[in-house]
Length: 358
Image (cartoon, rainbow, N blue to C red; front, side, top):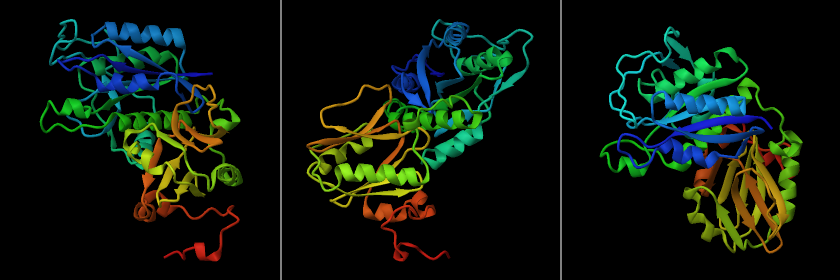
């Protein structure tokens, strides 16, 4: 299986955590787009950070490399366009070094541009409901140092793509910086998963997906929904678990409820519950649902997102990142669902389900 190398930094500047490593470390060994994710921490030190990064690239021979760093004060996920050939540190690094106007690579080019599809990644994150933008500066601290060094390292390996993403403070950090924006770790993780999946899709890396690793198309999506419905419909849920913190309050609300219908809308799957709530999941390129006997959880390197359990069967959702719980009002106004018509492969479809186009 091919590899994606993703890196985060150790804390610096007096912070007790670095959001890049807090989030990136949780992606280690995940499967995205048919690639295994390998997460590594970099020291926040000029020179040493590149030595560690280059050693990992040599050891892993990844298909794609994404470095992630903290940008306190930024409001969204920022995908960097360019790194410049200069270290100009406002503060000292974690070994006390504070270079001023020093080239990263002597006689190197003035700048290296990201080889990732930065605009496609931003669009995908925004479509997933996550604030994101293209950034025109990676600064002049260790983040820019790493981005420039990474792209310089890959200059003779055009098949391997690389780039850098900056992320905001975590909420617990922003609490110590009054007025500073922040973003929850779960949201940042979803953003990185979407960004990686989009990059792999656009650049054509890691296309060695197993048949059940991706959400199928057309009639197969409907068939998958029918199989899930046959295993679960009408059975009381005995246990419910969600990976994302914002969904955990719904766990207790769903126990004792049952699945009334599974509806497909494009690549989105809507799981309707008897209490009126609907679980929205867009599986994108790499999400996969499985039905297993209750008590038998398969061994897999995929990341479990949802577990819905009845007395005899359990539904498992792996790797999908765009998951939400909707009330009837939210379901009726969901922006993505408003653009997608009913499933033409659903045998229950009637003319009354079709709305005339305005």
